[in-house]
Image 1 (cartoon, rainbow, N blue to C red):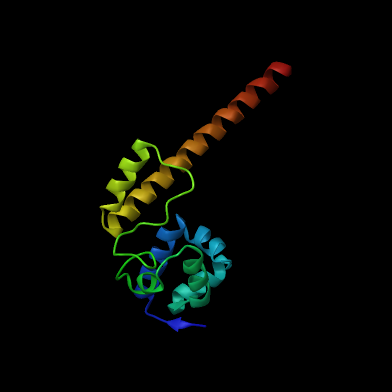
Image 2: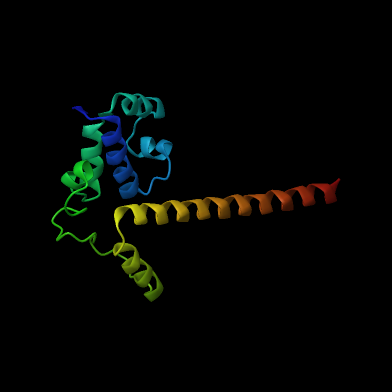
Length: 145
């Protein structure tokens, strides 16, 4: 099933898909949608949405198809216009609840910006941790030699 849209509309829909899936790159989104990055890039050029995959992804995350495709209405199905999901199995700490409340009060662009900054911060932390591990391994191998 295909739905042809302009390239700008394609980008907007896929940005909402990235938001919903917490994907920070097109490659991550392609993996989540079970597509090759080449197929996603070709669809981007043509402005053709992978509608069947987007519907499957939205259904699995209780996301409104209308919101995903148009950006209008509630992000989640059966919603009252808020961005609430079902409560997670584990309870949130007061700090997490406060951050989540602030996040939910922001518009989509601001939320996306925060998500991107947080993902970059995590990526940098992971790189720093790996660098420390490699430095330790190098020091150990020099001591053995």
